[in-house]
Image (cartoon, rainbow, N blue to C red; front, top):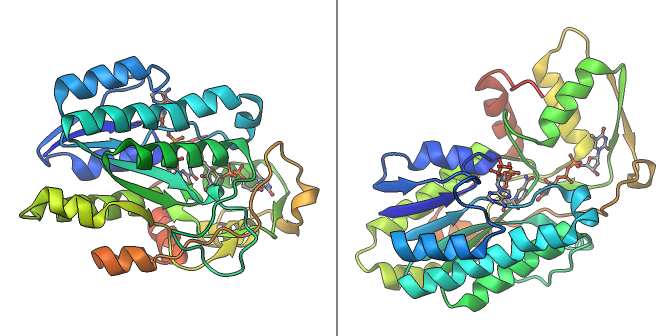
Length: 297
Ligand SMILES: NC(=O)C1=CN([C@@H]2O[C@H](COP(=O)(O)OP(=O)(O)OC[C@H]3O[C@@H](n4cnc5c(N)ncnc54)[C@H](OP(=O)(O)O)[C@@H]3O)[C@@H](O)[C@H]2O)C=CC1
Ligand SMILES: Cc1cn([C@H]2C[C@H](O)[C@@H](COP(=O)(O)OP(=O)(O)O[C@H]3O[C@@H](C)C(=O)[C@@H](O)[C@H]3O)O2)c(=O)[nH]c1=O
């Protein structure tokens, strides 16, 4: 299988690179060779290299910054997926794309299903929803994998931020009224690779994609708040000096972008279609912290 992977320097992209290496031909150009803000480059590369699958793990993920740079967020998160979809359809490639729990407004009180109405509260979520719609409308065979609260020991994420703050401060104030499922980048990549392996084994790949395309939720089991996630991480880290952690309300931590109060995603469709279940967030957090020393932030 020929795979074109974008965003291989990012959290999920890096883990995908590890999972997909050795699986046929893999091309993972950096931003210097493939800039998602240049749809012409994207189209040219896809038409020239003719991959079987484009895995798009690149995105504009700076949630607060996106409020100040809506055009940049839309170019990367909406226009680029549209160009990928168009070129992929022309060469018969399939597209695997990642999206977010922030497409929802957070007013639901039970896990979001794939077909629930969206209602993004911020520019990032809106741009990601536009990317989903563009891909679905492109006519390319595609899998849209929505995940949530992604962390790992490298890159930019909430876990590394609070570990840094824990070393610098005597106390932390963390919002306790936003609920979701923290998801290890590695478990997303491993689950995605298993889905791709099923596609590869299919005797009729066109039929497989026709039956299995669409939106799937792929985030950890269980739920917690950012406060609960912080407490659990710090308890497991056993730092020489653990700061006090104070639960606060969202309005006590004002941010440019509004975030959903509840964005837990149901994994039922993933299990029904592919027989795959993501690990519980507490198990993944333990595995992640045991997997090595965090990169200095
Ligand atoms: N992080 C999270 O909490 C969540 C993420 N997601 C989704 O998962 C996917 C992966 O996210 P994650 O791994 O966290 O992302 P990261 O922010 O860790 O990585 C994003 C990657 O995209 C690349 N990139 C950004 N802009 C461009 C561009 N113009 N041209 C080429 N490459 C570009 C970055 O390159 P460079 O290194 O050069 O900046 C980086 O490699 C995204 O679709 C995201 O929306 C979904 C839910 C939660
Ligand atoms: C650093 C910090 C953050 N917070 C709050 C702010 C915010 O409400 C919440 C999360 O903060 P962050 O800005 O780190 O996380 P955020 O950028 O909102 O994370 C999101 O990223 C995008 C890419 C996604 O797709 C989402 O699934 C989600 O993971 O924690 C505190 O309460 N105290 C703190 O000290």
